[in-house]
Amino acid sequence: MGPIEANEEILRYAKKKNILNKINILPPASSEVIFNEEEKADVLILFEDLNRMMQNSEATLPGKLMEYLPFKAPIVAVNRADSEIGIVLKETSRGHLASNIKELNDAMNNILHEHSLNFDWEKIKKYSRESQTKHLCELLDKLYVG
Image (cartoon, rainbow, N blue to C red; front, side, top):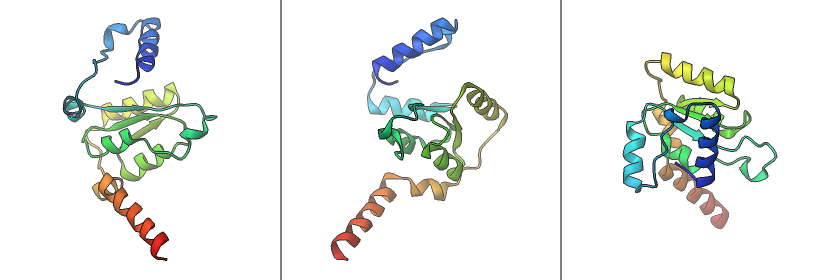
């Protein structure tokens, strides 16, 4: 799932809330196994830091978000309310941003009651590695040619 410290924190929280039997943290696995699990998922959850004071987390989009975008399952991102992740999820109609427990509950309830989201596949393509690399190359060309 993630760094061992994050796994341990989630397990401590689950034990405290008496829901440990509902949590299954998988052992480290190959990229292929992870891809297959993500492809089968009903919901893709992305956890990021909720700390507004962390300068290095501002104005960054995690690679995991880019990895999740093409999958069919809706995405729930747990992050700061002002996160750029929320902008991407809204623009692409791929999911929900939650920055507190109420928003997380609302997002999960919305997903349970939505039969399908109408993803904007053209906007999703904009965030693909291929598209992002092409854009970066164009910017670099302008810097060196111009």
